[in-house]
Length: 152
Image (cartoon, rainbow, N blue to C red; front, side, top):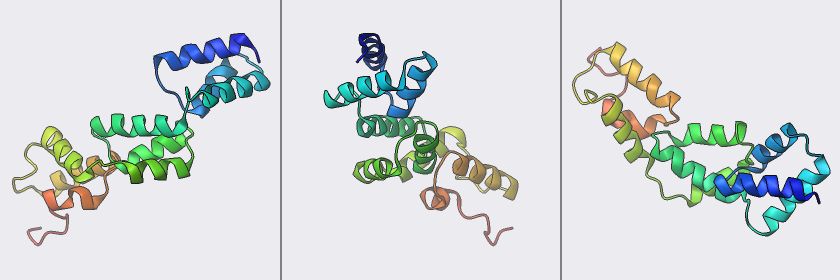
């Protein structure tokens, strides 16, 4: 195993957690051989310095605290960070995050008028925003009402 590759990887992990996919991409950009990457990663995983499970847990908590819903976080972990679907599912099942509370805090912060009687255009804007931030309709629909209210 190349000590240069191992030192580079340890330097990365000293700053923050990375997924295995992110590490592989970074090391390939630095022109490390595939063998050096595999050996350095295996060494770090054996010593529990790198773990996709731990990375996914931290990422889930970080993004939830930033006001994103579980759907968006799952998509980011899978597509941008390269974490396996099984790990993502395990982390979400083990988390004790109340997604409805997060949705409510996002509504309070972004749309403080959400409790008032809203016109259809404003309701649609709120729905689009909440869905694009990864919340399921069940997590916020009760707070703003459905877009098919009898008022409209």
